Length: 128
Image 1 (cartoon, one colour):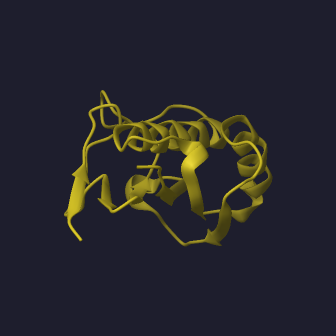
Image 2 (image 1 turned 135 degrees about the vertical axis):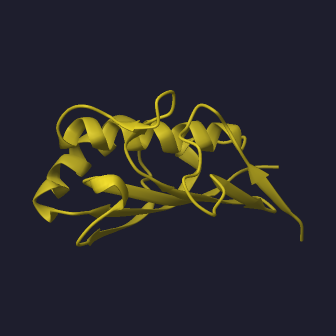
């Protein structure tokens, strides 16, 4: 099965040796997004809620570039440097997702690139 590399300027460009997303068949693997503003490649200003919203906006842009949307996400991984912010993830996630919600994991980590407070990656299944 062939792989299609997904790229969009509506999300931050890769800052390492990875692609924004890779599509294999109808499955799309979205790389981790941190709260970078695509136009400046700088961290979004504001609190953890603003960081979480920026991450969802970035994931949404990559999902669209792949021909889908966040509604097509079947698995979401959330990485937080402080799990005290987990309720904020739930609150903001409700603005981006509707039932049925994707499967999800929330993982506490010691650090993230560029000192981000949150990173998320996802797996998406899209129709042909």
